[in-house]
Image 1 (cartoon, one colour):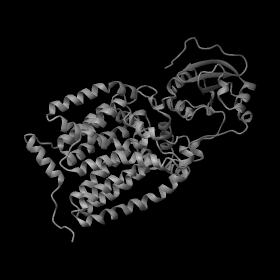
Image 2: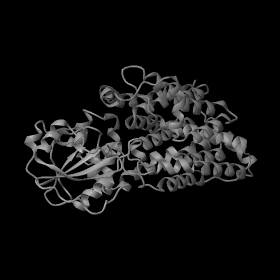
Image 3: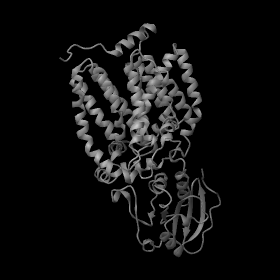
Image 4: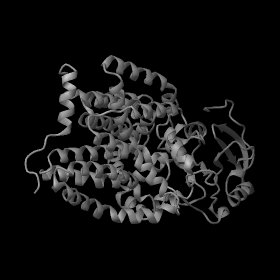
Length: 511
């Protein structure tokens, strides 16, 4: 027979023990508010210091398409990011596509994740451990890095943490259909933001099994909650799998060392990874279940992804494992609380960790961090064009050496400065793809413009060698190089008909 009376919550037992040992110190809204404010403050510092990276430029391209075009594109490519694109499309429609606007949702997501981590820690290990965990989360260099990126990964962290919190609330009151409904909606949300994040489910199953020993109804209620997730996500799984080879062909299959070394990339800092893993090992709790759940959340997804990366497609990228960071900070918060019995000692450790990670935090805000290790200064190249542009100028972009060079320069050019893209046949948005379709007969695409800007990757003395051979031959037949300007990772070249122009007197902006 199912248990009908409310069961005492392990969370209540933990917090009663903690309150007795802390002088009855109340928590209130400070438990979630302090981590939220701290994470938002840390992440907002230098929010626009880094140029948009290639993946962010894809976001910018996608969200500026109409809803119908976005959906049509998702049938061909990037379906696993579709929910994020649609949400960002609505956001950009309200707030524009400035760098701040594009990155602000990710900032809010990591700040929200810090709050949820603190609430989870309060339920699993007590309010002191929860507040410590939320604070640790705010200090992670990876949180700053991906809280300042216009991609879905910050939202995936929030979705996983929130789904786990909603599951705990449902287990607190297993007879409440509303709480189970909330969890049943949250779990598909995780998959819609990123399918790989569903590898957190084993941790949820373990949590349910621990409670089901006392309440037999928990053997079937979660199953009902999982049915909507399965029904909703099955088409996306099939579509995403059909696109995986095309999108992830470049990801190498991981060896055994990759499974160990990935953590310094997940944390975006070897020092931070070592410190938090050490604190996690020191975690203690009156009950084993919280420790096991967080350990499974932290360790099982990387193993699952690693095992599934030895088939036709490798999925083993550190950004796909960022959703394990809340679990690591929960364990580290519990470990730091177990080692430091007083708030002052714990605060001293947190301050020391914050100071030690300052170099990594600074690195996260370098101008080209989002395109490392191949820096391209789109903004400086755009400044050169802006300063010397004349009406009627055309442009040629290097699409052979790199991806999204054209989008990067276009983003940083003034919106009113428009130039004909000489060899562009169809833009990605017109063919529901992420890539352009170039003119098949380059010589026929020249329209007699007097000046053509050539933007290429690298600093080769002859920039024409960087582009398609047919395009280079067509340009050489009608144009000559007037002058070239190197910027970081790129060269800006002015091609003119007839007599060569004199180069400008100053070297102009370069980074």
